[in-house]
Amino acid sequence: MEEHFDFIITTDRCMMTNHHGKEFLGFMATGPAIGIPESIWKWIACPKIKTDNLGRPIQAPYGMRKIEAALIDAGFKAAIIDPDYLNKYLPYAKALLLSHHDYFAFGPPSSTWWGITRREPVNYKSFMELINRPEIKKEKERGMKIIAGGPSTWQWLWREDMIDKVGIDTLVDGEGEKVVVKLAQMILDNEPLPKYIYIGADEAPSIDEIPEIKGASVNGLVEIMRGCPRSCRFCSVTLRPLRYYPLEKIEKELLVNVRNGVRHGILHSEDIFLYGAVGIYPRPEPLIRLHTLVKKYYKTIAWSHATLAAIRYSEEKYGLVSKLMEIIMGDGNQEYLGVEVGIETGSVRLAKEIMPAKSAPYKVEEYPETVEEAFKIMHENKIIPAGTMIVGLPEETEDDVYKTIELVDNLRPYRSILVPMFFVPMGYFKNKDWFTRVKLTEAHIELYRKVFWHDVYWAEDIISHSYLKGPLYFPLKMALKFFLRVAKRMMKKIEANLESYLKK
Image (cartoon, rainbow, N blue to C red; front, side, top):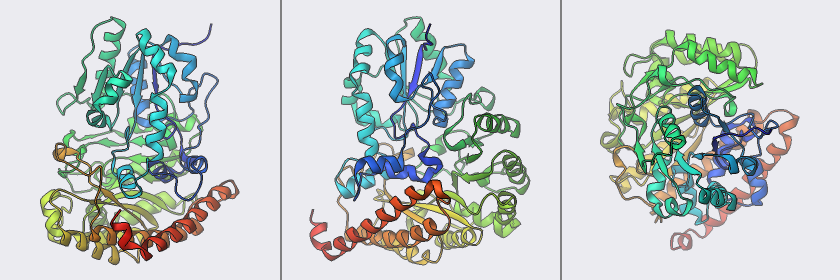
């Protein structure tokens, strides 16, 4: 008899992939195909992942692995299934569980691309293709339940038409490890399901209630903590309680990945440097122990996120960035480290309004200086940041944008990729209006123009000297170089006709 599962967990191809083992390539899926065929664009950003003979992916998104583990630990028959294998399992499933980082492309990278190009991003088209499959509709009519969760659950509330069209039974907004077990039992008992569940700080799982993953995570990502104490007004993570994973728990998940052949990984936290910290003050000992442990198992690592103030403080106070890079690169397996950092703005006035603690322990008036110092520290230590900035905040003025442009100019000497993104209402801004149909000002256009040439300059350097080394990556490297050439030609045309472009 073939294997069947009561609870099928899945997502579309843009999420069910490991991006050729290069996480940053996944950002390409948040935009439309530009200058090259969409099939090649998708091959670069989100190639198909290998599966076992049951259609279970050899790597899956970390958050989905947590939900899978919670259900299995509770005794349910559950599995993550690659979208290409859904037909095999849907006729027997009690429920289909969906997850996504950006369901309807309202997230910052996607909405930015969408607003600028006026074209649907690849990830939006990919998810729409998944949920409009006739086999899902057929099994929904049979009685199969559909639950949607993950970090972008809020986007369904902006697309209530899709809730009805797809037949979503329950939306789970927040950390779902405990709630999903209750919902699974309700489904088996034929009890009515709540339409919407929000998991606040009081209901969030404790460290002991967060299960360890059972299968490998995409690109070896492992979580080291949850929550952030900085209380930035635009961020939803600040609404979650702060919890640190003990090293024993982290090691268990490292072992899961290594046993499944994953030897390169990402440490995930909203700020790596706050692992084991006292408030917002980093401490060397926990971070040195953490990285020493991880390098026992992984050949190379990346950091998901770090704050610029913590980077500056750690290096100035303890020389900690340099010490960590000695641990990370000391075995000769790694030549650089990637990380996402939130610049947000170059305006002191705006920083005071929306993120007064972002620069702590430095004064908020020093924030632009802190950004520059942190970028200098990263450049000297072979850390390549992707620096995100927020465009279009409710309090933003034209002068604020020009202050950010000034900061971009000052960051030119430092190896980095800068990513200005349209404001998306999360955290305390969740009920604000925001642009889905964006009208860029001349200041915004100038910011994007400056960022574009900064990124092209450094992207060519990074691709040539640091990224995608080895013969296996040669076709991918050539595709990216071709894309950069096309992008430069397109930008020169836009610059030559800027006035007409602004009127579009």
